[in-house]
Image (cartoon, rainbow, N blue to C red; front, side, top):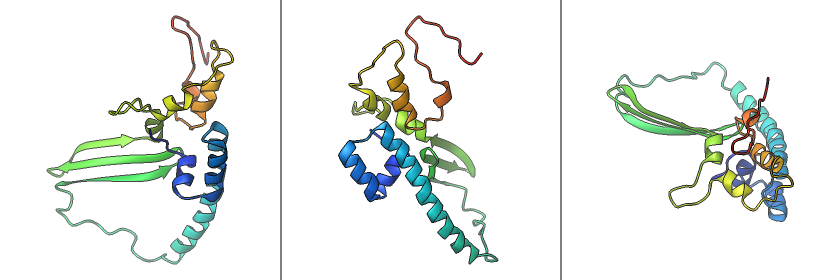
Length: 169
């Protein structure tokens, strides 16, 4: 099971406040929202320091072109912390052309189905055992899924099999 996003970022980064809150309360929708605010404040602090470092480098080379044959064959990967969580890129180059490219978005990490070992994806695991006040309107599921900040948040609606609803018209 993989969770990515502000809560995961702060836990893996060793943030003492988030670690203590999770130990006391467990991972939950409120803590994910709180972690989003905490990460924003910490990010602003680090951005200020980063800008000061960059200011000292003004006038120095900022791009070094690769050797002419450096991109004929190879593979690589990269991860970046996007607003919604970890964004992964994988790339293979053959004959100077991209032969394979894959992107895994934060929503894909969180919403993934069971893995090859049969473990539930994070969203699935987050709702197992959840009691619904009104199964015809499972708002609790929406709250939990939306606490992960999915990029599909505005388009997800729950309907019973055979029901039809018109949204956004």
